[in-house]
Amino acid sequence: LTGRLGDVLGRLTKRGALTEADVTEALREVRVALLEADVALPVVKSFVKRVKTKAIGTEVLKSVNPAQMVIKVVHDQLVEMLGSEQQELNLVAVPPVVYMMVGLQGSGKTTSTAKIAKWLTEKQGKKVLMASLDVRRPAAQEQLKILGEQTGIATLPIIQGQMPVDIAKRAVQSAKLQGVDIVMLDTAGRLHVDESLMAEMDAVHKEAHPTETLLVVDSLTGQDAVNVAEQFKSRVDVTGIVLTRIDGDGRGGAALSMREVTGCPIKLLGTGEKLDALEAFHPDRIANRILGMGDIVSLVEKAAETIEKDEAEKLALKMQKGNFDLDDLASQLRQMRKMGGMNSLVGMLPGIGKMKKQLDSANLDDRLLIRQEAMIQSMTPKERRNPQIIAASRKKRIAAGSGMSVQDVNRLLKQHKQMADMMKKVKKLGKKGIARGGMQG
Ligand code: GDP
Ligand code: MG
Image (tube, rainbow, N blue to C red; front, side):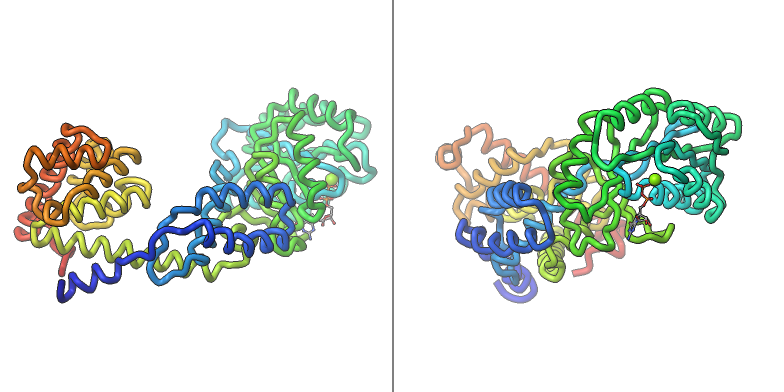
């Protein structure tokens, strides 16, 4: 191979798969990083174990060493664990929407109530009403009233001697009358989780039917915070967690423990005492902070991008020439598997939307991709370049070599032929100038 195509293929060479030894060694570093970030020990253990299974066998990208590759797998796993679910506040329920804030005393409920209300008002254009249900701590209701005055957000007038459930009822009624979008109920905490607190939460919850029940926890209290969260979760239907004092929690390890143990989505982070010190939860950022290896992650991401680009270029070149052999199909299948489906690679190529639909309908799932790769692997290089030469006896051999049937081999060859024909069509379209602006060699 010479010239440009040779270059492209050269750059694509991989270093093989991660071995158990590579993984074990790199995970030693990861373990230390997680513990330094204050992730709880049991969480570290189970996490490392899970990542290990996942990492072994992963292909190492060119220009990256095995350790760096492991870090990337770890990072991706962290992101997945931190945020596979909906993390945004529900803003679409029918108003008045009720948000109920729960948590221990001093965790930051009242402050977070005002922060969220401010964000809803200023950034989302919502009409918000805040109500303090804290009849236990002296001046707690006044605290919220003052925050309301500071931010220009309405608070429910205080009526001395009223019980939390009655305040909640009055807040919702008042919200209906005034056309309020969101009612924020700031409840009272306790020093510890106890029955009286839980009974109160239950009663308020039944009265107000909150759309969001946000558990506010102090990230600085570490393992305690996790225990508290578990206890709350067992009694109240917690829809999300607000993790406060992240500004004091160096590396954000509490987020991982919290998420892993409770399974609740972390929705917001409190990052300071000021009322605009509130951040949306970005799993990616926290994962970087916890690992403290952001440079390595972006290095590997860049390497992956280069390879994707190279593969796309290579395929584009092939298409331009109108030839697409079984090696190309195999490399395509690998890419699809790695990138989770058809959408990425093929979607990156210009002028190909229609073809993609046809390919999608070919029903390509992961197992199928693996089996198809296996069949191609059982062919000789010559056969892969030139599938027409595959005779019936060879089909049998190929089927046996890959544990498939002759029909499967025929199906694969047919699929390849269809794709190759499509490539030719795309080439013609390209010549007519329909795909203009794309695919210059
Ligand atoms: P509550 O008892 O749960 O209502 O807690 P408060 O909202 O009254 O907060 C207790 C203290 O924590 C106050 O001094 C707040 O200013 C402080 N606080 C709340 N959230 C944060 C945060 O994200 N970062 C920092 N540094 N302080 C916070
Ligand atoms: Mg309070």
